[in-house]
Amino acid sequence: MYASADSEGVDILGLSDHFCLYPDGTSPGWSIRPAEVSSYVEHVLSFRGRGEMEVRVGAEFDWFDGHAGVLGPVMDALPLDYRIGSVHHVDLRQFDASPTFWSSMTQEERDEVFARYWVLIRSMAESGLFDLAAHLDLPKKYGFVPHADLSRVMDAALDAVAASGMAVELNTAGFGRPCADAYPSMDILVRCRAREIPVTLSSDGHIPEHILFEFERGLSQLHRAGFTTLTRFRGREKWFEPLDQGLASARRGA
Image (cartoon, rainbow, N blue to C red; front, side, top):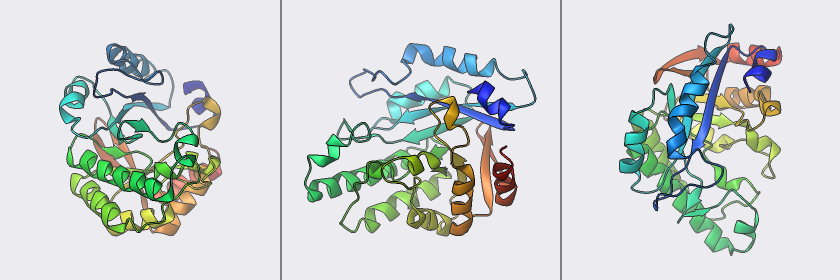
């Protein structure tokens, strides 16, 4: 990841592996184990000073209802530049691993999953633990969408995000998924802008080839939604850069 970003002329690289700890104390195979978190952070920090590119270390923490007491001590022990909160599970079932999760459901059941997702986003924001909300709108990944009006639960979740001081990301990975849309959608971006929720940009790159994936498209979408700045993090402090500066960088491949 570092070598690929450096070759692309990236100025600041944020690395954020997954930390998922189920309520029963186990972790899925795609997550860092609790015993590995400190060494992961140390390894990322070892890349600082190797060249002109700045390296930021973060982690993406999966949120389960009532999980603050579990995650708080882990986070507090780590010198992270930013803490990402995300929701991948509803009622302890991972909804973004396979389309079969959705295809076996009725539309009413799908609507309920979407509603429960936004309730969890709200409780995640209200925990006060996180700096950044990851890939809002992720349940649409496989092209299944709600038919019910979820404005009430969605707005309550976004109000909580705004009150917490968190930023949200425009995650461009969705452009390459069956939903063919970034996370979150334009409608949700506009709702975030109306609440003055700051925004950043991420490719959610799991392999080096995904670095800067559809960044120009993502930045253009943010511009259309009315955003004028991008959020950066260092030592859990936010600062802002002009969106047009990011757009120009994306167009020259940086």
